Length: 102
Image 1 (tube, rainbow, N blue to C red):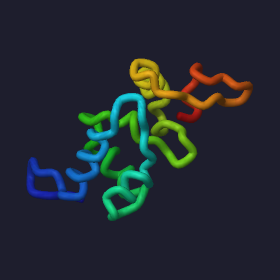
Image 2: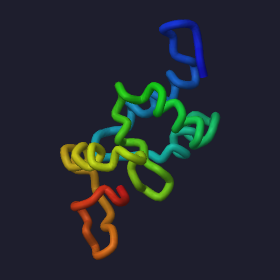
Image 3: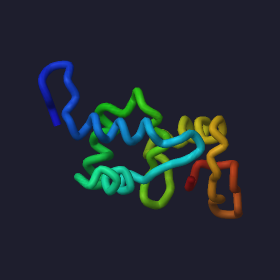
Image 4: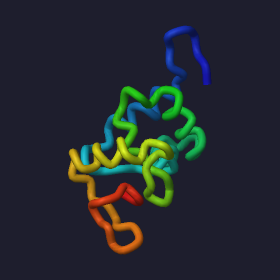
């Protein structure tokens, strides 16, 4: 996934455009993004996000089980709260308190 210096690959640009279009308080899975684009799969979307996703609302893209990107749970939870993103409860019904699953 490399292009000329300073230029994003076409697929990366399209992934990032989809992520930017996700409204506040909503999420899509990596697979949803790939399906929307009708190209690639969850791993390809994840790769784009890991390389280029820092400037887009990355917290709005979650894993298939509804969990936020690995190692970013705390930062994602803060964003979910800011955007009033509905959260599913983890063990013990902790809805709204953890980013266990969005």
